[in-house]
Image (cartoon, rainbow, N blue to C red; front, side, top):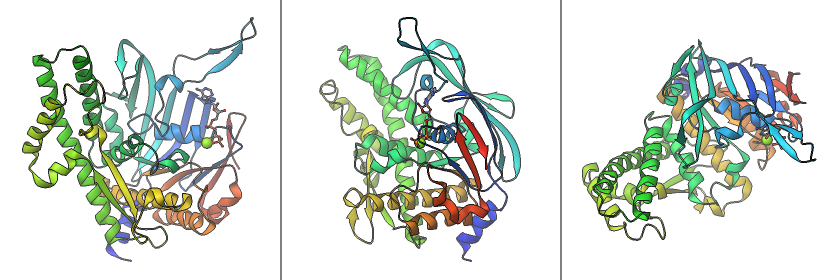
Length: 407
Ligand SMILES: Nc1ncnc2c1ncn2[C@@H]1O[C@H](COP(=O)(O)OP(=O)(O)OP(=O)(O)O)[C@@H](O)[C@H]1O
Ligand SMILES: [Mg+2]
């Protein structure tokens, strides 16, 4: 066993993951309890039975908006009713909650997240406003910082929506990159959210023609400071992943080379951070006039990255569907291992319909790797037969009629 494999084995020897998951008025579940026995959990059932909802609930034990990037208001259980006029109306409970008993390197903790009504309107990272706020409880105490969850559990996921990650617009790629950064830098999520908030505020000022405003200067100054910190953290993350993949190429999944693309990130190649802050301020100042027509293109909210299939020297977006999935698996596995080494405990891996597009060899290899790495994985499928290879080490849960049964 080489050094890295032995470090990973040491860190994952004591289990980390969810032991009991309890959902209340969460999407299609009025109440649901799952006792997880440590190994991979294969959640199977028909389309629409509630498999992805369970994985999404686990993802809510981490900061952010879960693996669907959902609005808080969409998560509480909608109960459809036929109105006297024959239309459909929804009755909704006031709250939803996800609670979990987890272990972190063998130590037990309780985590919970729920929504509560807020008296003031809250704006989320995408500018949606609502009167709901997500609250977080850690070992029975309310925590004001979602990022505190990251000290106890980390999640990483692969979903069917990500099959289009390399081909579509840049926003999902940026979100993916930022999620990878969070695992290494707890403050990154807050910086990104604060930056978005300032960006929108600045946009409104310019739209209202308050260009000479002293306030605008001060917003841009803060944006430049945050923006450079965001760019630096992203650079570091890409460099870390590239170096890891270079040093530890996978034996089954193709090696990737990731290339960060962004004006501010690029400036950091050539200048120290303080100077790049000045450059960023100049960019913002020079773009005040054009902003209302087309948002500025040089900021950190336009950063992108490009992935190459190293062996084939082919950009990921030109690879086949199955190859793209394999490239993603490569990145996820490398990130999961790096995360484990950095945080000192293993992430929970959420694999939604992961079998789609992978051939038998790759599917089986991925499952074996998850078992060997001793990561807790929650895996959904409509066809449990595809998971025979890990039958002896896994737990199979069937979801049907809004209930889950271990079979
Ligand atoms: N807020 C909500 N309230 C009630 N039901 C909901 C809510 N949100 C989603 N649902 C329902 O939950 C059901 C299960 O969805 P989910 O995405 O978990 O299914 P799935 O088992 O993953 O299906 P597939 O195999 O098609 O991926 C769907 O029928 C969906 O309409
Ligand atoms: Mg699903």
